Length: 368
Image: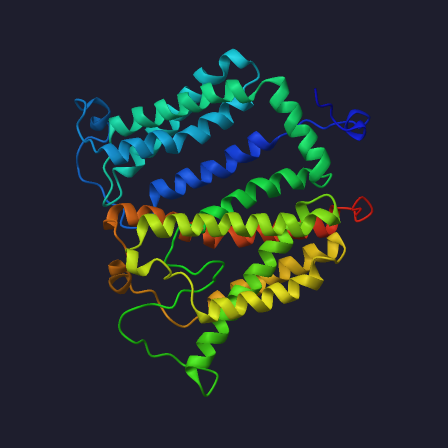
């Protein structure tokens, strides 16, 4: 039998709230993918409650309903883990899933391209129920103790570490769009040339600097964000490498799923490679700074990356991007829209968390 570290047994262990934090963040994901693109609201004139009583199955596609089940399973897990009593985990998860999905479907009838479906609501509720049942397996003392030992051994001693870990999970969603460069801030559009005013005599160089510089800044910001969450300095390089490797795997997976075979590496180019190489060289020195200073530098890097996005003069052209993909427009819009919206929100949350760390997290507890 493997026992926890003595330091863990002797340490007052604060209750974990990661399930609550995950619930809030995943709720953001569900609302984003359900209501994207948040435009074109209209009222058809039909009864707004009619879809609840449609005969089943009124509208059915195997892919959509499978996705509906899987999408609500993490929500069910989070709700189940939040339940005060284990026996109440799956009923509570099912109830929350049905109420949330029923509300989402009600709103979706006012969005173009969306269909309010009682079958979707039932599929979501079933997924939440499965998640609640899965929570029963996770909520035993052995799993809880394993998580607390891991948190005590590897994560910084702060509530921020659990918040940051959940927020880092959202970063992986930003890699769902394979047409966007890995860790890139801007996307060079395909299609017709677009005129723009360049502050440099060479417009192509200006675009290359923005694209490569954005990647460099984003790489530094994400890596330092990870470093702030890690307890021991000696574990920082490995944590950064594992995070970036996992993000790359996500990017490759969705590239294989969504892109045409000939466009598998559309998410990488020379500017991204150069920006990434420079970012890695800078990280070699930055990760060894004290935690508070790393947090401050990481926040500044992400803020500068946002500035690159604002300075990018070209607009995306959907007609030029669609030939890259093998999926039809509806499913593609949901995945890429989710990645785009979370990608817009994520840096702001990460900046706030790192500024919080720069102010509140001690450097004294960070040992090699």
